[in-house]
Image (cartoon, rainbow, N blue to C red; front, side):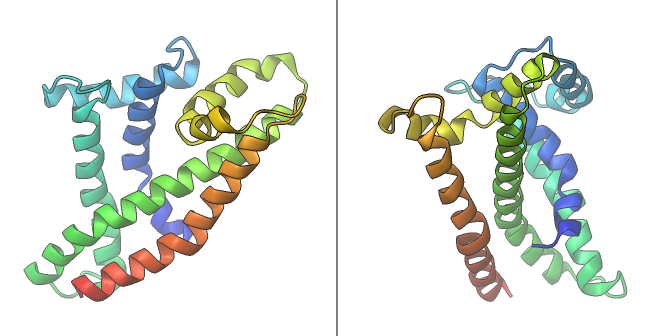
Length: 186
């Protein structure tokens, strides 16, 4: 997936970040968290669904709608240049966009893991809230490994295993899944 596709899914990834913040219980006093809540709150409040098992279903629905509108629109534009209006192509893209959204979300988590790892090497006290935020947001990926793989001193082997597995999924598995989905849909 090229970076332009990821940029097309940025509005959906903002809602994905809101979902991750609520799922992991991030500190809402962090300036980035405040901004994300301020930006995403009006559309999320339009869908009055309650949380199910600590998951904000309304944030996920708005994320999918944003992906269909922005990501699907970008894919449609890149495929046709808006020269052809085809309901058949729009319907097929609506089936493909969730696969592309999953891929964009996994890439987003992968890059957040990279940023968190780089920030952990910098001993600046002013970066501590940001380090905490990135650790919290990537915890759904790293926590299952931390349960079974103990750290060696201050060195987290679990993070490296999670990072390698995430890079394998993002750069090897998801391109194949996407091409298989495209063959099925188109």
